Amino acid sequence: MLHDQIWRAIDEMAQRRGLTPSGLARAAGLDPTAFNKSKRVGPDGKPRWPSTESLSRIFAATGATLEDFASLMTGRDAVRGAAVPIVGMARAGADGFFDDQGFPIAAAETLRFPGLDDDHVYALEIAGESMEPLYRAGDIVIVQPSASVRRGDRVVVRARSGAVMAKTLARRTDQIIELTSVNPAYPPQLLRADDVEWIARIVWASQ
Image (cartoon, rainbow, N blue to C red; front, side, top):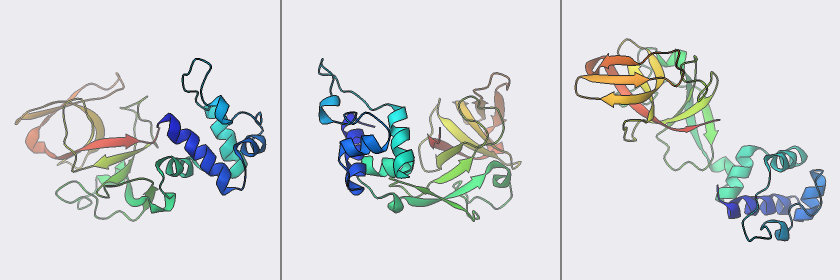
């Protein structure tokens, strides 16, 4: 997110509701000068950013969502975001759920994802505690099977046993794959390379 993008989104949100930036600030219960152009740069010339509280008040006053705001920042209409399949980890372990490249072929639900250019991605709902506090149960991650995977990447792995897990790729050779967890209570896992169906990189997380 860039400084100019955020302020442009605020201006656009005000304009779409027939308000000036000052009028939007008043509607949000803020000082009427909070969004004035003079307040966007400090006396020292450094950019000034709106607070998360200010943004939260704007959303409450206008009924806008974070997705709406993101679409205004990028200059795209939120409804144009791709509808990507969303799956839960438990169901992801079922036989026949993924194709050979690790893309779900039996997902009934979708999730609208604004500003997405590559539609060959899917959303996965995290389960378990092994990646806490980075990912918690219920968090949504966006997975891109076609993305290259390197050491240190956060990944989703499906074993031939059907187990699906979100981990960090620690090491990968022709013989073994080592996976680690963020939560220190979970020890590293060593898998034989031929026991792994596929590894896909996590490219975005909801938190």
